[in-house]
Image 1: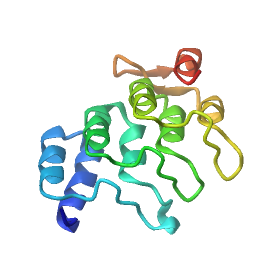
Image 2 (image 1 turned 120 degrees about the vertical axis):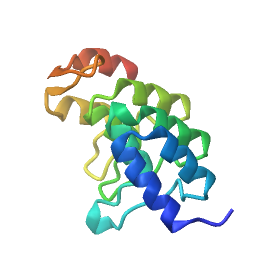
Image 3 (image 1 turned 180 degrees about the vertical axis):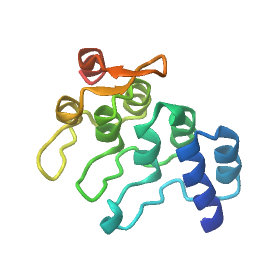
Image 4 (image 1 turned 30 degrees about the horizontal axis):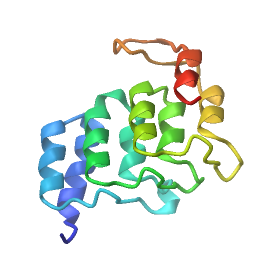
Length: 144
């Protein structure tokens, strides 16, 4: 299937908004599930973007099912698993690991996803959707 730039843009927006229906339609219309931004813009992939936010977890699952690269590297050699860990997204960590993501992947500065978690800000989105102090120990257990 050829890649559709418009559908890829729709998919990117759907990830930001957590719009599962739009994401499904974009993928069906030929969105490039492995799209990456230029390295000057961070080199993030759609997987990185989806791994950040719990509101995009259903879309992350769609990307995984569509065979998006769980090992994609951004400009700093962070994988989507690094991103999920740094943003305290336990469900994304579980999905990425089940899809074969490497918990020992190292960034350009030698950091693993677990390092990204421990170095991240202590505040974040909690499992109930509220904002507060994150239980990093519980998230670290998902990376063990």
